[in-house]
Amino acid sequence: MNIKFYKPKSEILQHYIEGYYFLTNKKSDAIVEYFTFPNNFSIISIIENAEIIYSENKGIIKEKQGIAFSSDLICHYKKPIKLSYEGNINEITFYFKPLGLNAFLEKSLCHYTNDFFSNFIPFNDYKEIFSGILNETDVEKKIDQIENYWLSKLKEFQHPFLNQVIEDLKDNKKEYSISDLANKYNTSRQNLTKHFEANLCKSPSDFKKIQRFRNTLKNNITKTSKDNLTTLSYDSLFYDQSHLIKDFKSLTGLTPKKFFKTISSKEDSEVNWLFV
Image (cartoon, rainbow, N blue to C red; front, side, top):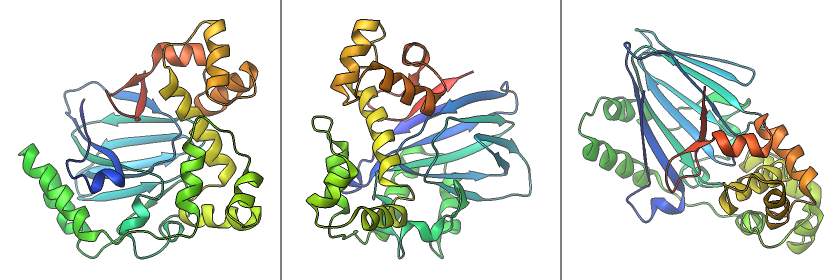
């Protein structure tokens, strides 16, 4: 298996897209399995000539001729997902920042998904354009085609408070309760939850839990001793070390020490994998 991760070249798209990767797998390759961990991105995976079978916390991507095009949207998962690849696979996967994908869509994000993953064909020309992009062999041309397409669909996303709430929750220097945020933006907790679920496909509490986990990875991915884990707990706004361990086990199935020892990530990327 070969995976190459790219940041958008376009400064405009950098506001909305964390990055994207090209994945290729050959029939001669051994079956590859890995875990991907919860995040607050909106993820789009586009694949050709493959059957995708999703079950609870597991996905199997297997070569199958006759399925020319598949595009799936994943917005919310709270447990690790184990993915396995078999056969000739050609895939493009996008990681849109929180509220990033909304800036390209006609309707709210929840309109496009009703499960942890959903078939995603948002535009009339989407399938035709990306079928061509999947078969482009020149990487630079492929990148240009991708970025020009998304730029052509950009509409912006306006909301009275969600963008600001997201920035508050991403701040790893100050702890906010959901009630604090509702009061700060002169709304109710119930209304805040309604807008989160409509535009992010998750509750504010789930977003906060996952964001704190992600902030922990940014703070220091090498702090594995007991003392360092204690420091990391407070640096990442956990109540204490036991709170850190509890959330890590919930979101990764692993203790922090084991997780940090085995994690694999691309340089300058928030995309994390654990290969098995």
